Length: 249
Image (tube, rainbow, N blue to C red; front, side):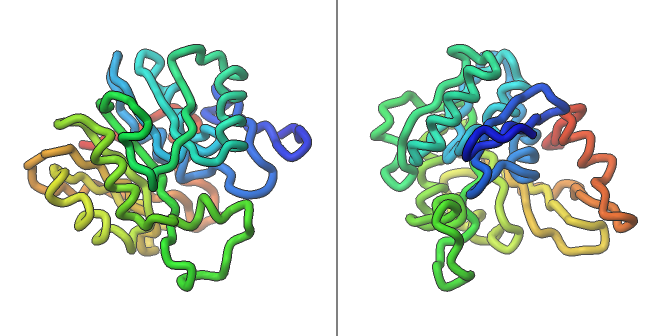
């Protein structure tokens, strides 16, 4: 890691992606890596990430799928600037673009055609009384001003019928996600993410299809760490290195 003033440079996918991101505030970590690994865009598909930050998940997904097109939407001007710098650093050219926009304002103001797939790692909290106030530089990433409903509403408007919606979020919000997406999307597939094999899931990856009608499917869980030393599990390490993806079957 090489410090660049208020930013650092980190390597993702075993060095395939260079990410410049803030030294303080929100930094891309395991959640971003899992979201990128859960993206299974096919050649020519257009993928949107809402709230892309400096581009951790977006760039990793773009590196995993070199024949797909990616757009990131970010409301924080500084984060969007970093994301654009990261596009140049990684040589993605015009295949990836960053737009400034606010999820609360909805999809329509962006003036874009709907996408084949959308993905997001929404802020985990929408009730300021639910936790100690985050540091100012983290507030936008942790607190959803418009609530989770604003994020699911944005995503369902941004994707075409038959397109996919992929989210990573707290496991205890799974019921809310299903309720908010129900009626607009279906064919849910859910993968629990456990910190340890003997611990409850702390995260879930959720995939939905707009207007999908297939029964809900609960997939085998992903376990992130071994109890012996707290190292990443072999499956998690392979994902972080970009050697494998998180499929939906």
